[in-house]
Amino acid sequence: MKRPLEYNPDLIQKSEHLPLEKEKGSAKKWKTPNPKKESSETEGGPGFLIFGLFRFVKKYKGRISIIIGLLCFEIGFYASIPFSFKYLIDEALINRNQNALYWIGGYLAIGTITFAILGTVRDYLYNWASARIIQDLRLQMYEHLDRLNLDFFSNNKLGDILSRFFNDLAALEHALLAFIPWGLGPLLEAAFGTMLLFLLDWKLALIALLIWPITFLGPGFLSRKSTEISYTRKLEEAQVLSLVEESISAQNLIRAYDLSNYFFNRFKNNCEKLFQISLRLGLTNSYLERSAGSGILFLQGVLLLVGTIFAYHNTLSIGTLAAFLPPFLNLSYSLLYLSQYLPALNHASGSAKRILELLRAPVFESDPEEASIPELKEAIYFENVHFRYKGRSKNLSDITLTIPKGSYTAIVGGSGVGKSTFIKLLLGMVQPNEGKILFDGMNLNSLSRSSVRSLIGVVFQETFLFNTTIFENIRIGKPSATLEEVIEAAKKAEIHEMILSLPMGYETNAGDRGTKLSGGERQRIAIARAFLRNPQILLLDEATSSLDPVTEARIMKTLSLLREGRTVISVTHRLSTIREADQVFQMRNGKLERFSVPEPEQQAMVL
Image (cartoon, rainbow, N blue to C red; front, side, top):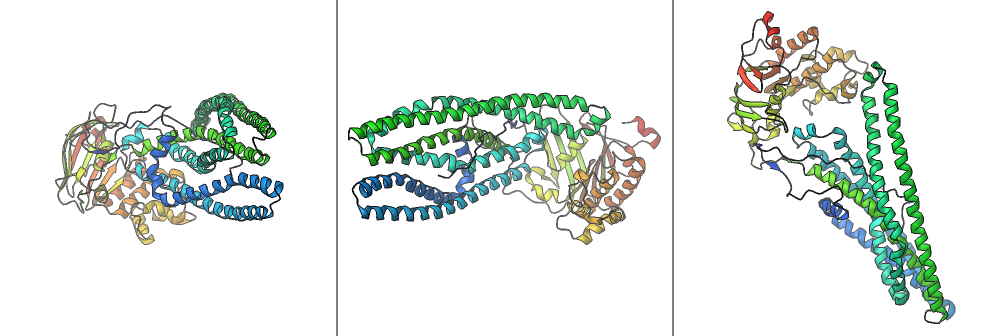
């Protein structure tokens, strides 16, 4: 069996499990897997990996069956070589049988060529299937993220979620690619080898199997110890990486407060801990390899001595003894490879468990008969809506509101009173714990999310720009838009001239999160998106709160054009921006009250 030159099982980084509990009292039905008993960090194992990912593997069961068949042929041929040596010695050499020499030589020549060809085919099929399985898993994980409630992202660290796409998927991929050479291959070799040993000489085979477990007591203990230290090292590596990420993100603060030495010393201390753990792991792995090799040498010596005694007393032929040792050594090394692979397989099972936790996190269950809403004809209704985030007191309480089609509704209030939550409820990003949200009398929960969101355009307080061209960032509003449509939207948002002044115009990269543009420019791109989308319903979520007064005045003028002929819902804490609203409500302590906009000189005293 061909194996990688080096196999490192310490590739899996574990971290805390995701909190997957569902909020009690949710008005929306959640889709979850069949409930299972919570398992601890130590539970799972290879069985969890195999059965947990079976649905991704069975899609390629045809190719996998071919792979296993080819593998069995390879191992069968490899296992037959000792028999060839036996007959080559006993028949061709000792008995001077020339025909036996020709037959055995021809068999080995044809078998070797076939072995090489079919092995190449098997390698291609296996690598193709492994890559496809990981790709399917990666795509399903990404697709699943879009169906999760926003609470999931609030309650889990970004780094922990990302680690499932990178560290855990990489661990699974590595374990999967090593499964044939380090897992299934050695297992089948051990099975073939055991049968072969008993076929050659059952007495010597029985002695070997009785002694073999004793020689691997040391490696078994050290393997468990290595797994424990490896897990500790991964935790420390995660801490070091976290410090690097934190330091990069906080460079402005670190330099402003002259904290470079402080953060360097903190990083140095963690690196020293990592060094000590890595040293322990390296020594343990060295002892593991040395003890396993010593055990095999000891067993080889015992069998050589016993076999020689048998041959001396004519109870065993020299050819049988010569044929017995290679498959026995192959069996020993196969089991050694398997024992080295099992810790990695257990680690990969932990990664599989973390990935499956993500895939089993509650999602909105799509109703196959859910309705679509091509346009808003009458109004949006909030009927006794209550909402709270998990672990908090109620954010919104008994919200009752009617938003007629074509009206301009403003909701004012200070920071943290629930205005943005109101927007998320409208978009179906979060679900009310009690009450209903109706579009033309149809419950939002019974409507297709896609059809509802197709009616809506949003301008958020913080505009998110992707690290791509300005053209692509505007086209987010309508992915099928042409260049002419994008330019027209940019003109309406009064940012076309600024874009043309850039060296590459619309092909200019906006930078990571739009860092190459000013706050006002980013906001105008968000408005251009809304113009391009041409929504029936426009949501303004503190659209100008982060801008200076001059920029805000210009943006408000542009927004007044965008509001024409649309149902507009604006949440803000700046009263000066909503004087043209048809109805104004104030949100205070999670409740909504009708509100009269005061005169400009009195506005500062209200909120």
